[in-house]
Length: 206
Image (tube, rainbow, N blue to C red; front, side, top):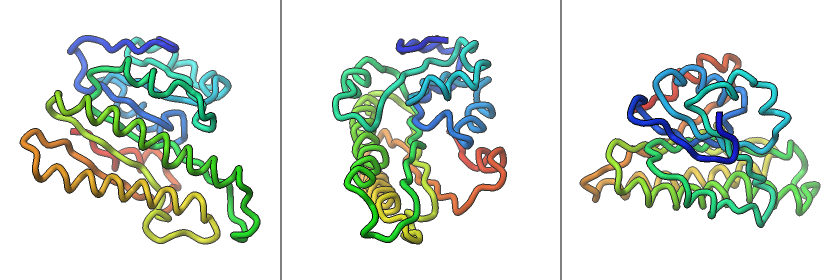
C-alpha cells in the first residue's frame, strides 16, 4: 500500500486504473471485483473513510492519493503529471447537495458541485487522456446517475454538472472515429442502485 506515492506494479497485472470515488459503495464493489488482475490508483478525499477499508491498505497493487476536490489549490495538476502508464480512467466521484427549491441552493452548494462533478474531473480527463494517446488498449469510463439524462427532481446543481460532464465524454467518444489508436470512451448511467455488487458487474473493462 502506498499513500501519496504513485507506484504501479510491473506487467503482472492487466490494467493500471486511476479511479475517483473508489471508496464509495459502488467504487468498493468495483475494486473488489477487479482487484486480483489490475493495479489501482485511488483518489480519495478522506482518511477517515479510507481507514474503514483497512484490507485495501494492505494490498501491494493499490496506491492512494488524497485530494480535496472542494479546494481551489489542491495540487491536482502537479499530482497528475507524476502518474504514468494509466490505461483505464474511471470517474466515479459525485457530490449532491440535496433536493431543494432552486432559490434555496447556496453559492457554496453550486460551486462545490461544479468543482467535484465537473471541473476537477475535466482536468483529470484532459491530462490523463493526453498520456493515453501514447498507450494502447485504453479506456475512459464516466459513472453517473440517470439524472444526467433526465435532469432529476430538484437536484439542480448535481444534475446540471453531471449532464455537462457526460456531454464532454460524448464529444470525446466522437473524436475517436478519427484516431487509429482508439480509446474506448463510455458513460454509464444508473437510475437507482439497490445492489451495488450487481451494479459493479455492469461496468466492463477491456
